[in-house]
Image 1 (tube, rainbow, N blue to C red):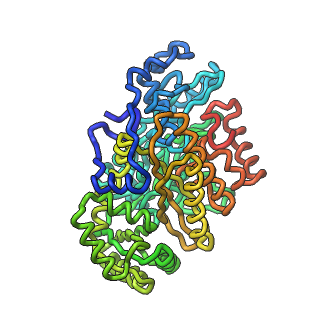
Image 2: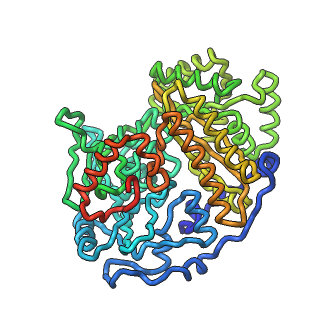
Image 3: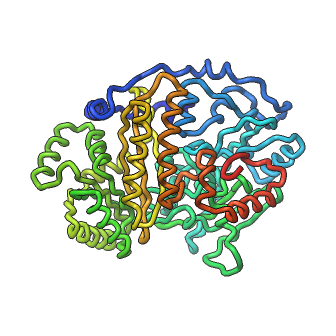
Length: 530
């Protein structure tokens, strides 16, 4: 059973190691555990649905509650405290294009709004109903979950858009293929959600972002169906796929996606390499990226994240030995960890690792084999569960990300982290903030920032703290000329910053397309643009 007020399966719990608890207490203070609102208490707050009875609509309070919020920090505060103030009026489960079209017709007749729902993993408010006069129906695409076709000659697979990451890989691996798209939300997120938010997977350096994998598909818009042909290339005007990518359910609902797949790799390995400083590591990964060395992942943690990662392992004896050895070799307090992945056939994997490791060595990189990399790989999708454990231990955690050219990356990262610290200092609280370069490109990198602070018993104070930190960091991102979102999308939380990135004319172009495809404003109001 999926958690209704947290991340993932209720049966899975990832404990907080004692070393990590001690570390957090020493850096930001002891946690402030508090009681959470029980499920029944929140259910009792749900009023009557504003929708007339319909055979295809579920108005059960539990169904409405489970579709009310995503996974952002404000969502967590609302669900855990029981302060959820808006719910969808009903939930429907379409199973075909015809069903989606029928719901569009119904919405026009009834004056309702529709929210497309994939895996419910949004951290930017994509799926949240907002308070307005019109009733809201959430369309859960969970029944769109099949592999419809695998064109092995062309390397193209056609999936229904509600299929989750694990189901994609299960259906492909049975035929010897992989999509290779692995965001941290992979366990629950869906192909349609990836397309709608321009998702990026952990190994996008090798496999590509979703815009590289999305070859075509089918979109149901309120104005009619749209087929996107899976062509290898075209000079026939603007690429309509790019208009659907990142559209966040405002232009239509993706029901099928044609994606580029590959044969399962012969070898996949992850290695750990330490640098004496984050700058030295950044110089190394920039050189690797610009040289086009065929690794599959370059994930470079700053000193604070490196320290937190080691403490999180829970292996005190090994940490002690590692610290002793690293210190003796001159990798002390500023040391930073690079997780380097290779994914290919044996010969290419060997070449990629040796060539990348040689570049790292010129920047003072210390190779440590696969132990750290294997640990990361084993827990790559379990670390999201630590969010539950941290909350119950009295800590809140959130993330944000951006991407900038290399010439501004390191300065922007420092400024973002400083802004977050300064914002929480105004509440007389400390925050542990760290970052890693999560995706690198020849011309720049993505900065992924994580920040932890002590919970407050007052949900309004918690939200005020989050707004201060998020707002301060977003202001720095805009001032530095970075994107407001590298991989989390815009939703409602980032919408006010979009104009700074797209410009006035750009916003008008987006709105004109929305108006043409959804003149009655049926779909996902308030997301992306308002």
